[in-house]
Length: 452
Image (cartoon, rainbow, N blue to C red; front, top):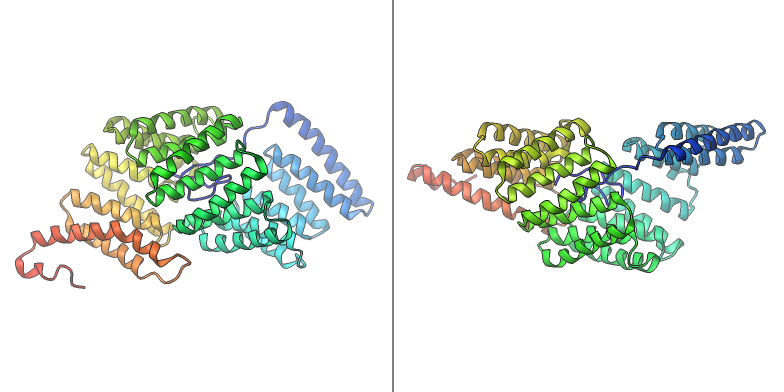
């Protein structure tokens, strides 16, 4: 599934996440008055020499602006506070704003500055490490996100309590980082612990539970435990339905629909995605990237049902929206391009399909690590296409490159057993390609097919 950078659930997970909701006009007007008054008060306090009071007033004004989705103006207010006092709180506030703006490297640099002057305050450091983990997660630097999230969890567990909302949030982020690395055996117990913490803190119907239920379902699904994942996805949807949060419901429907797609149930998958599409159109409109995500997912569900012509239309529209919103070379459009290519191949439009497969490979090889799961998975996908076009030599060359990246990897923070298990489909394709190549080769050359 095509993914967007995650705010609620975490990068790399199957559920695409939206940004903040549009504010109502009355709220915006009231906020503007409050903001003007707050900034004027901050300036007056600064002129009177009350630095702490001025900083607090600027930060309060920035919060009001951020709630009205005025991120640039909010940043200006925080920068005014930093000009008065370069302390941990305003630096951290500006880092979070930069994160909201998608300026993840800027956020990380600000957090480094704040950590350098945290003066050993464990509560402050716990917040900064949490924000640091989010920045690393958004950048796809999962191993570093894991380290920072674990540090935040340990600090919060010791200093603010084992069962505390901030402790649970940090543990959830830690589990997300493990899951993003394919370390599901370690992520599963962490997610289950978070689920128990949230149930104690908020009760069985709170939106926090829907998030963790979906995350745990994703982890179970990716390790072949679909039967265990199914009730978690269904419960996540039911919790989201009573939460009144349309964004959350769209996310959970998307997750459940993707699960149904992986189980080959295209009809039910399509129903979930159609519900998510109606919500996306209501929340963000027809031109938002999330709407493109859902349209591409509908393409997958239609393809599951053999409705390739309809699927091609859905993929084309999803691709157009995602390219416009995320850029033509974003890794977040890879799954849409690849699914579109699969459908074009099924429609015997091989030249168009190969153009998209090659484009996918160009994105993954230039924007992701050689042994990244998406890089390896799309290599296998392209090789499969080449095999169906009676090009086993090209397929074998493609797989040899990917296998070299996988087997030659050193460290990287991922359990080597996960890498070996992930290699299974690639080895299978390599063997298939090798035997096809051997069948076409003279008998003298056949004996050397597996030689390196």
